[in-house]
Amino acid sequence: MSALKPKHQRLVLLAIALVAIIGAGLLASYALRNEASYFYTADQIAANPPKPGELIRLGGMVQEGSLSTLEDGVTVAFTVTDMKSATVPVRYTGILPDLFVEGSGVVADGRMDEGGTFIAEQLLAKHDENYVPRELQDMQQHSADETLKTLETSQ
View 1 (cartoon, one colour):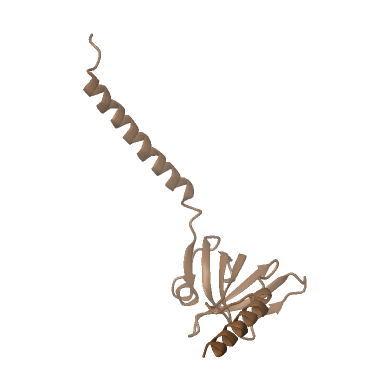
View 2 (cartoon, one colour):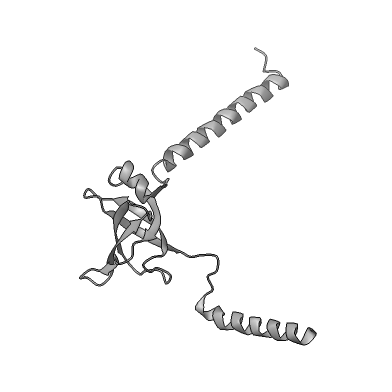
């Protein structure tokens, strides 16, 4: 028997490489299927609640007057709202972000429990575009004063 012609060898290698790439992509998507977290707002959870235990991301505003620390001292309970009518009770155990306050935005990663409470594993406090860290507030004020003096002297 004769060996394959070089042209046919390249086609066979190309077919094997293509099958390997497709197989790797399918394997990666299968492995990551449970790691994807879907973003929900309070009204979306009220309308179509996710399955208990499913990893999701909840976003909204911390409802005024809802923040409380539980007996253990490290667990906090609060309510996330969409600022309309829907609310979701949330429980988080851990250190709160510095910017986390009532009335501020929050994004939480976690899972719903059987009772309809969102158990947060990670909290991210959202801030507006005008946020300046405390450490830089004095520096920013000093810079603004210098700019104002420069403008006054140039006129």
